[in-house]
Length: 305
Image (tube, rainbow, N blue to C red; front, side):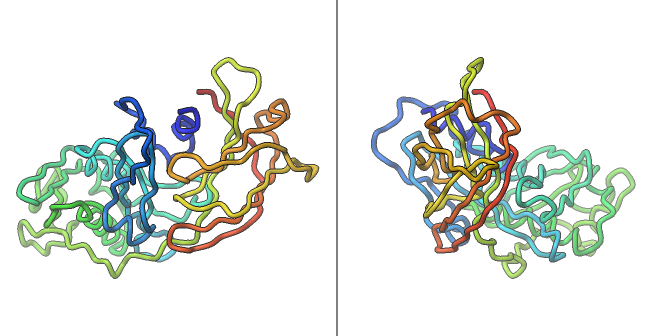
């Protein structure tokens, strides 16, 4: 359980994993494959296995900052099947601007935008946003990416045949003096579903390292483990951690739950303090054979759990 808990305090991209720790009973000894949407398997390959409970893997489509009008798939996990669509929409609304992805994704939702409701009936999902979304000054390509991101993110789930979007409960007409129909691109026609456009999806980049974080028990003087977090499940081919003097830190290295992090159990924990400059050399391959290697220098973060 200790390695599993480490993921809870990682970086923003791993927040979804915290929900996989909730409401767990006694962990089964048999490895069970995470249930994944077809979109997840298309862009990230077979889902990982876990013995820590039932989890679900899906994709969030974030608008690209480098190619206007395009979206980028990103993997997420959650525990509660009943909240999959709500969690996905909330994560899309929250944006993604951390680690090695900083500046690569747009935040097309205007500040203050809230999800007022998400309803599903007969395969039709309707997500209702607050009026703040209409205040965006984004151009047409950004608005298109926003709408397509919502449509693609929600349409990936089993049984969904249509995705609709409302603003303050309206699909056309005016909300707080703003033209909802124009914003939604309906051309004045009422109750038109959003159409997911697969052609706008950019292929995922090779795997990336996101952060290096040491963990210790609350109140403890020394760290227990040092975690190197990646952006997706993968296989670690090579990994080493050195100090500013290029001397390698000794210890055992192993995979965490979901294969999204390497964990170093240091031989000498006293060396790891907050702010310590560490160099990481890695070589990894994801489940679809995309490989990456590199060297990076990081300022060590220390978290308590």
